[in-house]
Length: 333
Ligand code: KG4
Ligand code: ZN
Image 1 (tube, rainbow, N blue to C red):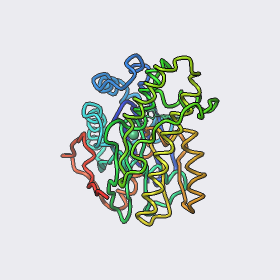
Image 2 (image 1 turned 90 degrees about the vertical axis):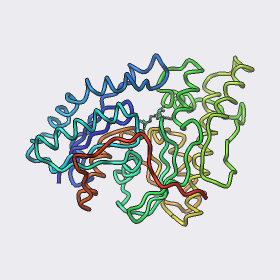
Image 3 (image 1 turned 45 degrees about the vertical axis):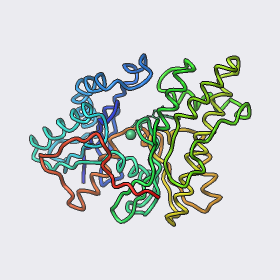
Image 4 (image 1 turned 90 degrees about the horizontal axis):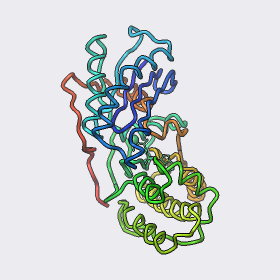
């Protein structure tokens, strides 16, 4: 079965063709980084306008690369929540137009569930009960996924993890997006210059907070302006990674899960990947972390999950709408 997936919830326009939920025939991502760089973050108005420019060429590109004809496509899957409304609308409108024109089923996809599905590209069996850490520019959430149900057990109370990387990089004048730049610098840095705070690490819940850490780093930099940026990057990254992993492992313990997945743009972080594998191994927890191309926003995860929804006959009608909020049931612990 061939599913065409469309992802446009934030600032990446992506279209993919995936066969039977696993075989990625094409996964095109049109990045908008160059348009948002000078602002140091995503500007929603610019994002929506660029999606409009990119969406049709990206669809054609994905179809061409996969060597697929419209009659071979079995369904169109599209992210419809959560995200920037103007961005989501572009993807959803394109998906509805394709579904109507070619008489294909339409499948609405939850962006966080799609991120979690990406672990299936790393070998996780679909439906495996697990704790998913979704850490990106817009989200830092812990999800409890089992029996077709996705519960939010924790989320950020202020900045998302990726947002903290981006803001620190902006403050240090390093460029945008900040995550990959800090990641590269941190690999050469010495984190022992300063132990930055690990916000909420010992709290009896699974929420995150990164705004205080960001302030601590800024204060430190103001007081010690000559510290090599690589050392600050290393100490900052170590604090973020420690909090993310500690809480993910604690959630797995609490909910008696022996599998976790780490997904979203921040899951591209080499420190997080290494440390997560090491600490999960110590706790006898199996961990799935997708290839970097499936960690950052991509439509392959949307098409892959669309296949599973198709098998379950979980289709959406033409009345499908966009929603900025995640709309998940939140269980406080
Ligand atoms: O999932 P994503 O592509 O888009 C959102 O849904 O936000 O995530 C983008 C975020 C950005 O904040 C970016 O700085 C961060 O992921 N990111 C990283 C790395 N690569 C991307 N953060 C830390 N280390 C990285 N290597
Ligand atoms: Zn995302």
